[in-house]
Length: 167
Image 1 (cartoon, rainbow, N blue to C red):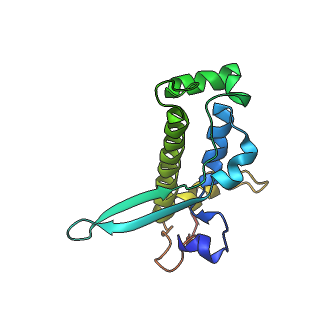
Image 2 (image 1 turned 90 degrees about the vertical axis):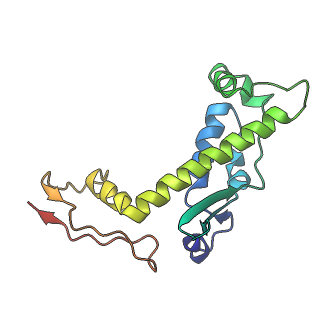
């Protein structure tokens, strides 16, 4: 992702992997401080198929630090979450398999979040949403229209142009 490279990202090239990793870590009893190394993620989007008109999206997360026994995994809510995911405790037949499966779940959820955010950016929905539901002290009129918003161009990754009109 070009934006991460331009910003000088050290933890990989992704849109917001750390947000998702932290949420899952809290829900499953992991140490949320480990999100720094565990959020190292490279999201790739590339043309795919015979004509190159399809899109292949992948996430590579080489340093997920995760476990399914000990620590916060024994807390009732977190243990219930691990149980729901089918990875609670140790796998007696294949030690480490539950932790590996949980890591795959984390990466899959990060991939879903990356696709969602990038689609919102490409469609111009993220900027419109932030303007409409803005949590700052600025109050926007109820009758503001976002009909003239355009998604960012190929060369501008995170910028959208809106000519707000009041109906």
